[in-house]
Length: 128
Image 1: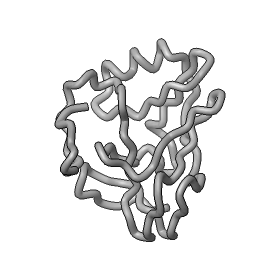
Image 2: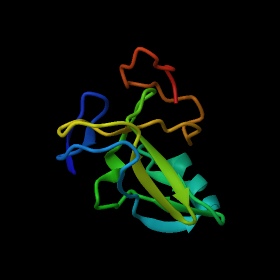
Image 3: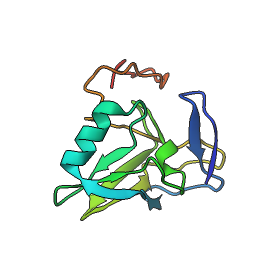
Image 4: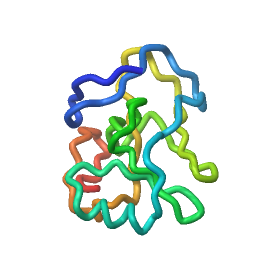
């Protein structure tokens, strides 16, 4: 994986190798916090890197080093996230060519429909 400039937003995460459908790409890392603390932080952070997992826990990836915090949103993503216990794992939705930016549909997010979407998809919902 490689973090570099994105046409979607700031920096993005790109794959260096081709990926197969449903292939595990990696796991989101970061500080383990309560969901309550995660929601508090989301209200005060400009760039939100918080993923809610199970058991009332969240992962704050603000200091995450694997690059997965740079996966940008797309209304037509090429990855999906599975929450397994207190972990968040990323998988390819379909074949992805080497050099492609990885994207994820953030779905319900801490942005509450107030952040303009910049994904550029023909099916863009316009806001997160």
